[in-house]
Length: 125
Picture 1 (tube, helix red, strand yellow):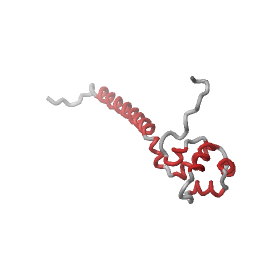
Picture 2: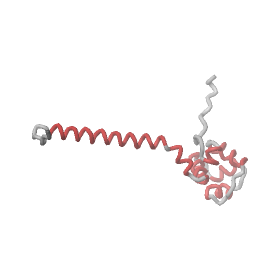
Picture 3: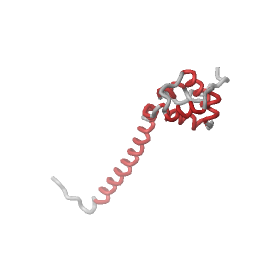
Picture 4: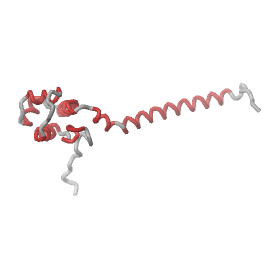
């Protein structure tokens, strides 16, 4: 019934192991890539509001003073938004920050939806 592995069957057994190992590693790398894409929107929910604001300001390439001027607030207000010292962010300031940085106000406020709005193409009917 049960046969011991003969020397002739060793290469095929090793080949099967190598095949399984190679495909397991490719499946593992695929699953990592798949789940990182699948769960990337959740990461924005895990970020705090001040982290999202800091990310938007850094991505815009503008300095805090420039952001403050565009939003019509003092430099200290922008610093408080980033540090989390400000408990609330007025809606008009939130929308001004969104316009200045190019990020969506909803994403800045609560972390839902895409970070940036899709680009508008005037040539598309």
